[in-house]
Every structure is written in C-alpha cells, then in structure tokens.
Image (cartoon, rainbow, N blue to C red; front, side, top):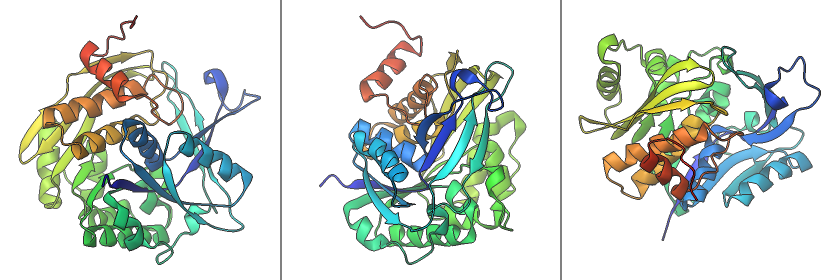
Length: 335
C-alpha cells in the first residue's frame, strides 16, 4: 500500500496588497491560503505522494473556503473542529528591490492555538502513514502546542514512521516565556530528516560553526547534537536584493555532502513558501528512493521554481521541476 505522508501544522489565511503595494496605501487585499505544512502537503499531492494534513479549524464558511483549496490539489485532511474560534491570519507585503518583504501575524485565539494533548488520536492516524512532518512554527505558538508536538512525535516513533522537520524559526511567535533553545532541541531528537539553516541552528543549539566552512561545520555540529538524524539539508542564499538571489542546496548523509547546481534568480515573484517547496521536494525524492545527487537537485529546483509563483503553494509539476534542472534555471521557452 502506498502509505501517506502525515503533516501537522496551522492552516492560515494570507492577505496581501496587490501589485506590491504597501498596506498603508492599498484599498484591496488578495486572499491566499498558507501554512508551512499545508504548502508541503499540496506539493506532495501534486507530485503523486499521498498527503494527510492534520490541523484545527472552526466550522464556518471561511474555513471551508480554505479547505476547498487543499482538496483541489488532492490533499486529504484530518480536521479537529473547534467552536467559537477563528481562522489564523497573516498579512504579507511583497518586497521589491531594496524594500524587503514583511509579514504581520494575526493568529491569537485561532482554532489551532487551542489544541492540546489527547485531542488527536495519533496512533489511529499513523496506521495509514509511513512519514510524519512538522516544523518549528507549531511549538513556537504556545506550551500546549509544544506538548502536542511531543505527543505526536512519540506516537510517530512508536509507529516506526520516518520523521522530518523544518527548523522554521519565527522570532515574532515565541512569546509564551520559553526560549526556542528550551523547547526545540528535545523535539528535534526524534527526527530522521531535518531542513536546517545556520542562524537557526545557532539559536536552537548554541553552536558556533566555522565562518569559513559554514555548511560543512554546521552539519558536523548538528550531527553531534542530533545523533539520530540520517539526512540533513540546507539552502544557502546570497541575497542581492528582494528580487535577485543566488541559491544552492546541500544535503548531508553519513558524513558526505551533496551540493546542487547553483542558481541565479532574478525578477523573483515571491520568496514566501520557497523553503516549503524545497522540503516537499526533499521528502518526495527521499521517499521515492532517488539517488542522493538526484534528491538535492530535485529539492533545490523545487525551491527555485517557487520563486516564480505567487501565493504560498508551489503548484509546479514534477515535469516542470525536471525542466528547471535540465535548463539550469535559464527559463527557455518550451514550444
């Protein structure tokens, strides 16, 4: 049986001023649907890897509108309904040139924020799954959600699932009296696959990588703190402006590092969701047992193509991503 990839996180409504306007000047807001794990679930479903997205939402028309976007792409869901709550929201101002993009969260009192341990039957959910994914965003929201993450991870480990995580540090979310370094190291011990970044690795674990060998030393130090991890990935980005970046992916396995071809991205439509696109490519290609060189090329190309797509979902197909790899990101017209 082709078992599912289960993903746990908050589903969000994103509101964005059109045409790269600032919030102060706009008279309209465009609706998109978002959430790190939801973004990954959509990509996986498009790639043909069955995904099961676990979240909490109120029972109202707005939540149903959001769910319809997941169902459109073939994502299966397990929804915990919470009365008298709301859909979490965030506002995003697009960056352009020297002006960086900006996110404003409005997530207090959302349905997801009230989740606590013993509300989800993890063992039953994991009967049809062989992979579980979560990210550092969820335990950043409150202690109850950090405890629920631990509960899910323990159940996933007991069910012998592969466990993956994106470090996903969000400074503005850690408000409940715990520093990320007090929470994340314990939770990450359960993981087989991680997507890390240098700055967040320093925050979570207090490590100090060698500035002259950032990728290699970060992987080495993370392996010492996370001895059970089998695959570690990261992307390195040289940001020339909000709309022009250089981008390369790296994958560690058993002491070896595999690098993608480098990409030079100009006229970026949007950076939001690029890390999630990369993570989806990583999960899909590891799960389908591609070679490790193919894994990092595919994951990186997923991140690259997401920079050309507005909205949080990476709706590119495997064929489109393969074309990015073959063309080295040149974007030649296909006729």
